[in-house]
Image (cartoon, rainbow, N blue to C red):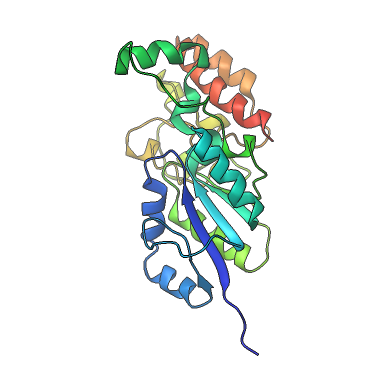
Length: 246
């Protein structure tokens, strides 16, 4: 009896495709994956022949149009497991950080008065369909991507880190940005990214999503105390969207 290969499909909605490029960086590991699985749909790699059913579907990007939402629902209907890949699918990405009340103003400033946007309010993928697992980050971390994919293929439940980015900063002996009166979301952001931004002179923007038991109240008070109320509004906007869809 011949064992049928697993069917893994990769889709993108509204995004920069940076997370998909990260998947390509798995290189030889992708070739090993091809030994046990077929990838019938992946726009960056091949032309699709038929749509589903899929054992696993990876979706990158924010559902920012009615076509995006329609595709996401179609993928969910045809997939056993759906994985949200990257901060755009997980949290809604940068578009979700924008206050919806100010979106029309920004559209006019960028595109002019005559531009008619077809976009819907930016929300996480989980606002429209059930998501089984997440691969976090902007872009995703290759080690986490490999771990999550391998766990799924081994019929294991991937476990997310329970520590904040701050712990990973301490491991790398990074100076605390908050102690330098600079805004940083490390205390409320889930680890797993290896503190890549603070380790390279940048603050944590929270693209891993909120860590379990994050103290949002303390974070808000500290940012306001440091004079970053505007940062507080953006942070709480995107994280509140994520919490509402849990």
